[in-house]
Image (cartoon, rainbow, N blue to C red; front, side, top):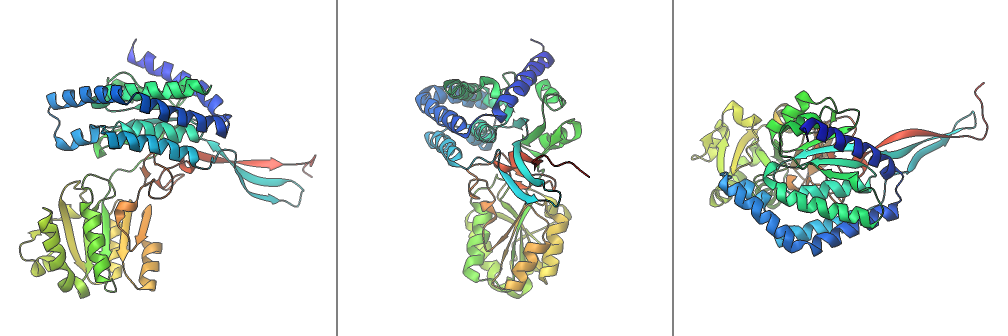
Length: 418
């Protein structure tokens, strides 16, 4: 079938399924999630075989260690997928919730009800576990979804798609509520993002190039973030032990994630005390430091940072370092060079921490915690479908609430307007 015709068919099926999903009961949605988890367990060996084929193809195509690691489905990662499905099933269902109900002088009651977005298109790269994360959240929030994973994970995603269909069929929900795009043709992406008659929202998960392309070409609303240029600011009132632990964890826990710290800001008053200790720890872990003049005066073997470094998401063992004279300078730097993703202050000063919370313009702002906590699972959302740095609708990790909208509802008893 022609790619355009194929994508139109997926869109039509998704739109029809969205209507059924919007009225699905919480019990049925939860049963479907548990059934999917059970089928993944039963298909574990076949899933390993499909994933091995993807890994072999990836090696043949010259993928390096980082994307191969993201692609691999270990037993631990399969266990995490299964656990995630159970966790999403245990979460409260937001659909149908009515809030802010108030009686007006006319006698009517006005409130807001949470409703599904409809059809969500999700485009992502490498990690096949995203297939299950996205499907579970879309199902629980009453949406239909079209999933377009990376071509490198096509065999794994086909297997997972079969598990999802089996779970849906077993509980009487429409099997087309979750559809995984079967073709690796790149034209499928272009078609998916230009079908507003069938798709309500697009959520891209991947590299900056992918997200920029989708943002530029889409005719459907896009929920996105481009970069994860995250900061930790060590204030002059920081607890030294907390500062060192947070700064090390925020950078070295994992290098290739969007919530990894890329720039360390440190107050001049504590830089002489803490920078040498931090530089030694980073050095032992193989992290390259690129600093401002003041930083290099304290740590002599630090490389010189360029203007471009302050605006770079490294996704690698590289960290830019700047000494600042005040919290004002730290906040100004973050709002100017950051990507509005996640930023943290380490401080015992209440006034400074509250200023940081109020004035830093990011989707997650933290006090005395590692930026690595900016994650749907860590936030208690069960899982996340992505991070949004947009300011309309969802912002930050997008969980169940982020996959719903609100509409006004009016409850009356025969009132007419006079």
